[in-house]
Amino acid sequence: VLDFEDAVKGRRSIRSFLPENIPEEDIQKIISLATCAPSAGNYQDWRFKVVINKQVKSKMKEIVQSKLYFLAKQADKKNPESFRERKTSYLFADAPVALVVQTKLYRGALDELMIQCGYKEAEIDYLRMRPDLQTIGALIQTALLAAHSLGYGTCWLAAPNCARHELENLLEIRPPWSIAAIVAIGRPNESKSSKQKIDIDKITEIIY
Ligand SMILES: Cc1cc2nc3c(=O)[nH]c(=O)nc-3n(C[C@H](O)[C@H](O)[C@H](O)COP(=O)(O)O)c2cc1C
Image 1: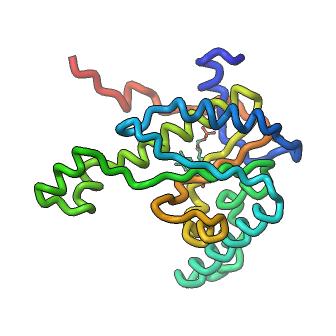
Image 2: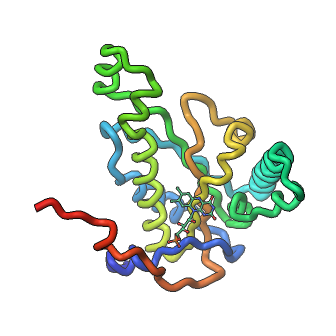
C-alpha cells in the first residue's frame, strides 16, 4: 500500500494503457473506495457504468468523434476532419475500462429555502456553485487515487461530454442521471514523473 504522500504525488494522467484486463474485484475496490468521498448533504448521488465491452467503447468513441467533426464543421474550421483525431476526447476507448461516472442535480433544504425566497434555479446554481458537481469531483479524485494505489493509471475525461446526450442515449442513462465524466482506467503504458506545480505562496493567502 502506498504512503499517502507518494500516492498523491505519484498520480498523473495516463493516456496510454496496456491491454491487460482489470479483475472485477479491483474495479469494485476502486468504486468502493471512491464512494468514501464526501458528498453534499451526504446524498451520495453517484452512479457508475463500467464499460469493458470493446464494441460499446468503440461506439462511444465514434459518437464523440462525430460530434467533434460536427462542431468543427459548424464553427467553420478549415479542416473539420482533423477534429476527429482529438484523442484526448475519446482515449477511454483504448483503456480496458471506461468508468462512466454519473451525477444528478442536487437540491437540498437550503435550495428549497432560496426557491421560496423567489430565487430562480439559475441564480441558485450561480450562487451555490453546484454542490452536485463539487461532490462528483471529490468522488472522481478519490477514484483516481484508489486506482493509482492499486497500480492502475487513469485519465479523468470531461471532453467526451461534448456528446453527452448521445452517449447517455447509447448507455441508457436517463434523467435525473447525467454523465459527469468518464474515467479511463488500465495498467499504464507510459511513465510520468511528478509535475511542476504553481508555487503555493502565489495561490494561498492566510488570514491570521
Ligand atoms: C475536470 C477535469 C477534466 C479533464 N478532462 C480531460 C479530458 O477530457 N481529456 C484529457 O486528456 N484529460 C483531461 N483531464 C486531465 C487533465 O488534463 C490533467 O489532470 C492535467 O493536465 C494535469 O495533469 P495530471 O493529471 O497528470 O496531474 C481532465 C482533468 C479534470 C480535473
